[in-house]
Figure 1 (cartoon, rainbow, N blue to C red):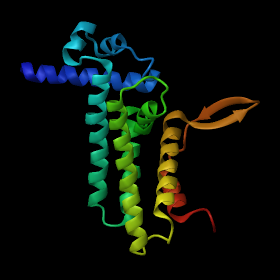
Figure 2 (tube, rainbow, N blue to C red; figure 1 turned 135 degrees about the vertical axis):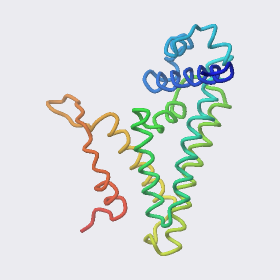
Figure 3 (tube, helix red, strand yellow; figure 1 turned 45 degrees about the vertical axis):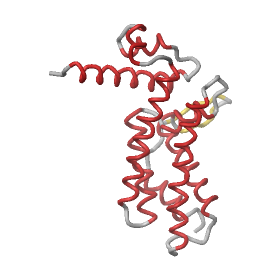
Length: 208
């Protein structure tokens, strides 16, 4: 049985869960405090006992959940031996995260980085700092791989951007489906989930 502290912690988690799902579904500017309270199954007044504003709630969401999941990815990459294994771990855990949240964490970050809504500098800085850390972690792996002769002599900066962009798009396909047009109408088919083929393209390129 949960004590008072445990119950508060559980309710706080419910609020963060509801906010995360709603922001992904409706966008930051279209998600209201009352929506989050309803999603968490509590009253609006109760929510304000935990968070003084929507931005305070989002800041904790970024600094806890998003940063925590990224830290797990970094930890798994550190345990891997080769550059290829590190990048594979990054990709594998991105897929796990997408399955867990039924969306890509990049979608969540991009909601703030590309949003026209007024967002505090504190929230934007928190989101940007994670994006920078994410890029730096991939850049470091590729740079070390190039220097060790494991990877071709490519520009690590460009290679990192290509890798991250490809992974992000693949994650979106897993969530939104494969885009195609029929009679000028947009449709989406489920992605085939062929991760091995994707990684083969990434590591070996397209040239025969």
